[in-house]
Length: 266
Ligand SMILES: NC(=O)c1ccc[n+]([C@@H]2O[C@H](COP(=O)([O-])OP(=O)(O)OC[C@H]3O[C@@H](n4cnc5c(N)ncnc54)[C@H](OP(=O)(O)O)[C@@H]3O)[C@@H](O)[C@H]2O)c1
Image (cartoon, rainbow, N blue to C red; front, side, top):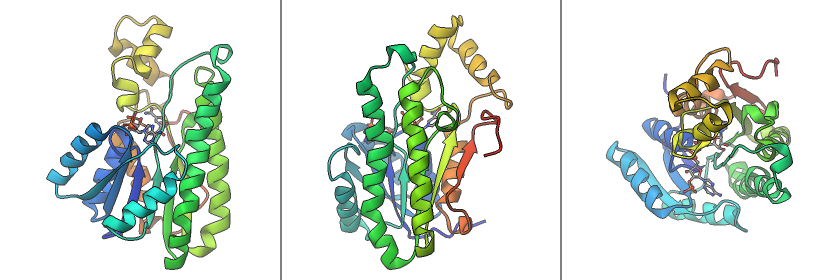
């Protein structure tokens, strides 16, 4: 099944690793052109070379999405490389485990900037061009923690819940212009966020007292009906579908890709 995204111009934030990198890979395999965005120039250059070697057409933009005017920079860079942006994936994100009583207000503010203000700014920047062309797809990568707050990630949970509200509002406002906005809510996924040394897996291991990383991962998996963590490819497949022409009647959704973690039908 082809997804109908050949030559579409995509902007993907957090494209240098984990889920965002796999979305880049999958969209490029379908013939789309991708502006890969993240902060670390060396990592971004290295990952862009990986997809180029697979035949992808990509350009890179080193940018912190929480900077003022980030959206304008992204639109300008995409226009210079490829043309107007058809598809935006707000995927950049960060989490760490900490108890509610230990979470400083500045962390709540930082997550609000990353999960609400940056996606707001980026959506506002790309929508005028999408409206002119009467076609657009926006996917906001939230979390199962955005639907069901995680006590061990309070600031993250609140930011991701805000993102769901923002996403739903933009969906309702712009669907009639041909711009379909959706959110995806992944559960625990084996990206760098979890698997890198000191990442969420090591943090979970410390909290649970598990003897090994393997045991800690099994424990995280066992907390969901599917009994394992996701791979970045599995989450990317859902995002890629929502970016495509095939998702032409999906708008305003918050798609769970969480192995059954959130135990409600929303
Ligand atoms: N992994 C999970 O279990 C899971 C579950 C639910 C939701 N999610 C969400 O999925 C998204 C992707 O997560 P992941 O697991 O793939 O994480 P990851 O492996 O840590 O990758 C995060 C990416 O975002 C970039 N990034 C972070 N902050 C940024 C900023 N301010 N500006 C620009 N780029 C930034 C990182 O590169 P630089 O550091 O170089 O900027 C990297 O490319 C996040 O929004 C995350 O919250 C993940």
